[in-house]
Figure 1 (spheres, helix red, strand yellow):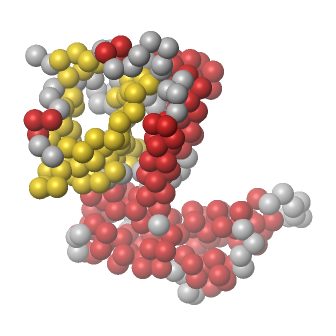
Figure 2 (figure 1 turned 90 degrees about the horizontal axis):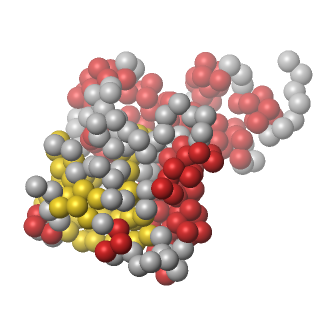
Length: 284
């Protein structure tokens, strides 16, 4: 029978959240439980196993899970070094307030999920940012203002294109999702192309290409170019770098090829895209 954890046992009256960084070394450190509160946790280092609502899921560095009060879960370590988790627990009604205020018309609420809670793979810079925010919370007064500040930043982050939700409707294996988030989140890897993505997965390029074709209906080269063009479009919009420099940063040394795939994706040249995104009116 799972233990029910209650927020008032560890959050004093007048406070709104609990924040902790926990190193799990043995499987006996956290047994099956549910709660009368919501929580968010993410894995900073190491690997573990998440037993959640009767299912078993692997945990890797960068995984973030949005836990709902009825969820029943526990953890186990994988590997001799265990794993480090940051956990933030808070009263669930705060989520209802934020949903009504900012997401009332949205068809789906990210904290609802289905049989399993929402899971996300964080890019490295997002993982660093969340760690910094958790450190700020740990030094604060645990007020409602601080809780809403954290949740608003988290919700905005999860609404961006940089965090990949790991719902498994397309069957994409976790090893590919994690590698793809690292590849997209660390621009210096773009120059390595499909070979670098395969290296991040720990699989051979031929196997990666077969899996990408099966689950995403495209080649690994197409997938890599999608990531490169996402990066290029942001650079065109937000920087004054030359188009040549942006193409080279993406790992596309053939400028003609860069223009060709950019035009297919966005329906215009990189220069016209930049002018439009930077607010300059351009004649058709």
